Image 1 (spheres, helix red, strand yellow):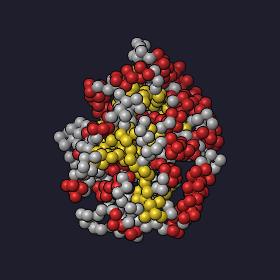
Image 2: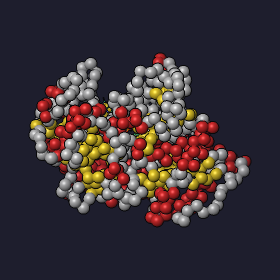
Image 3: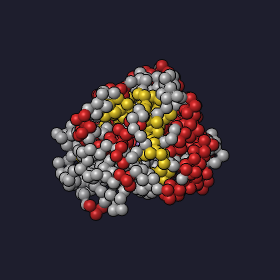
Length: 615
Ligand code: GTP
Ligand code: SPV
Ligand code: MN
């Protein structure tokens, strides 16, 4: 794919450069404020150089304070970037309607530009860093001529944690600033830490003309830099999130001996008051936010069980001195999927969405409240594009419509979320959307087998990325779109923890999405997932048995507590391991792993062979 694309880009790039040159000759020079805004020379130089290259009309250094935010919001209300929602029911809540062609991540336009192609691996689109840089420089030239350029210093992770990492995002989008303020620790404290460390990830972003043909998300892991052009959507534009905290961070983590993962972090407190932490990797729109803030079923609550939210999307795992893995959430907010969020499914999310939230691409009711499919049975009047709602045109809210809120607003927010050491992890779970085959829960034989489970997991694609929805694809560790280097090396890195640490978490695979013949879900999900978490924690403490199968250990039907469920699920089907089905699955996995041959760790092959023999 890279070769023809590159040819087109070159011709197009020449045209673009010519247009920019003419524009530059006929326009007046921008007025750039040359006062030093930071004591860090390398940062000041970069900002000046970008301001001059993009010909920004003004440069604004973000402090992150309330007055700044009020001013930005006022300005966006005026420009139409934000619309006010019902301020009586939803104080300080706003709606952003994006360009209809700019509603999700664009995996086909996302590149990892390592010095050589093999380092990026078959799991990434690759472009030569020099070529990518030239392409992006062309796009950015003069692109902020009539716009304000915002400089956003941010910290990923608790501001006082040695595990946190710093970055600066430059953007011309006030919507990005407002979201980064909620999603990261942004502003003056972050800038002070950047100046002390003298070291940060450089992210350059412009919404450009929002032209899907001039849209690229480029990563330069060896240079700790990101360049993103042509999209204002979350994962493409909030560069601290997927671009920094996963793609760049995973690359750094490999050389530094830790892991940057697409995982939620949740604490489960038992009736004895003891809290254990679980990290869970589920692909985009497959249930991380919901699991991170679930409220236990009534019988569990009465018995004294509690659930504490540490993070819902990204998890940095570091080895501790005690041989355990410790997790921090690098984010400070949620950028969550709106559709399906309701009082029944996720009351904690609903409770934090009635103030201080930004909604993107949801519908609105007749009294201007935000609305989406699955919320309740009110009828929306305007759809996500602001048109009169007409069910013939599809859903009222975009399937990937989202909310942004500070994590501290979550009723189940954990006290430990700010712990600079992180929280110790007892179990890692891998989950995906599989209509058949994968049982409700299955425990790995050991760490190496757990890595194989993660490396070979698959899931149906969702609306979180552009492209077809509902297609089953391999999504190793839920990192297919986010790993900043070759998956084969990434799996080897995961395996290496087996030798280095003696109190590793137990590994499990779960599947909330198995369906019956009529297409309905076999497992009630949401709050009831607590029942599976309880079994997982019992296994971690050696308090319950499991049945050995060729592909992992499953509970006996009556080992999952079903007390209080209105309808008894079909546990036999939910826990079945089909010999034929798994034989086919393993053949398919083998084919997939062949893509990585030459670099694939031998241990993974051996683990797969063990399962095959046992079948
Ligand atoms: P990203 O933010 O894209 O990374 O998504 P996520 O993994 O946090 O997914 P999220 O929790 O937002 O859930 C995505 C969709 O799946 C929502 O529509 C949920 O209502 C639905 N969902 C979540 N958990 C369950 C579950 O246990 N069962 C079923 N049937 N649906 C679920
Ligand atoms: C995902 O797609 O996994 C998300 C939303 O969490 S985004 O920030 O766009 O990546
Ligand atoms: Mn995600």
